[in-house]
Length: 354
Image 1 (cartoon, one colour):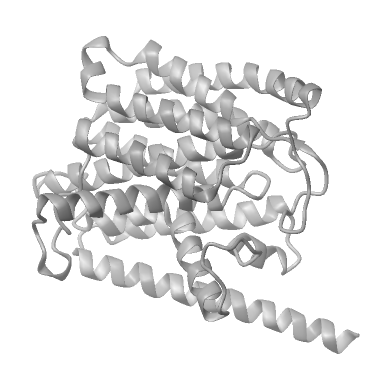
Image 2 (cartoon, rainbow, N blue to C red):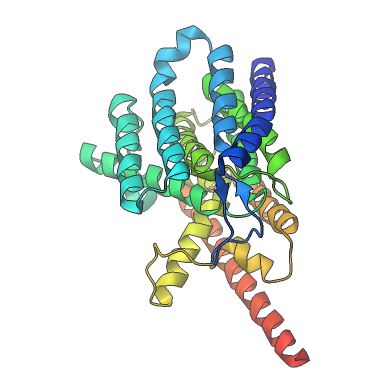
């Protein structure tokens, strides 16, 4: 664990030193996120903080990952490098949604074909234990795109995306270390340190946003971690103390907030007759803030929920995929319905007072 911690500290220091430079440069060059109708923040804010996160992560990875391991992960870093520049381009001059999607598909395809990052089956769900090559490609591609964009979607609240990322990378990194998968543990802890440094400046009231530059890189790495976790965990021997019988259900718990938020807004927008791709304020964090919570309180609530799901996965580690997924889905639906009812009750109280 010493190397993982050293990598986290190194990326933290690098990111921490670069963020103020990014803030100063962004203010000077007017690279700012301006408040608007769909945005929560009230003041113009520098939006290129993801550069510091990526620099901290990349430089620390170069320092602490053994040279003999580079052939095993070089395509991950190449993919993150490409998605980083897509994010920078979008933050400087916004890209059309279709162009960003095409870019993500190309990067995901790079990981699938050159790095052989694939979901080879449904791991027992619906009785499917093997997929054809094309089915595997499409399943993996969809998974990478969904996870990447689900993280981008939650990046609209001070401290939220950074907090969710830290919890997820800590969970993945610790498990990979325990399972003797040290390279991925270093990658996870390296990103954790970089995001933690950024979060100091991003906590309410935020001095800087990560922008798509940071959100795309973090989301893509989380997608890689999720797929690798599912494959490695599934392949562990039954007697391993670190094996979860539910690979997919456990991975979902590690990144539950962005996943549930994405599914929720798609359902709500569809029910309202709106395009699932049209931005609005139907995200989970928007809903919680309607209850009168601040940015910090909302972030702490959602961070606590994510930790609860991770604890649930640990408690249910001896249960099969179908039971864990059923528990996750049932709990998520129950919490979503409860949140909506609390909002309606608050509105009723306001109308009664008026």
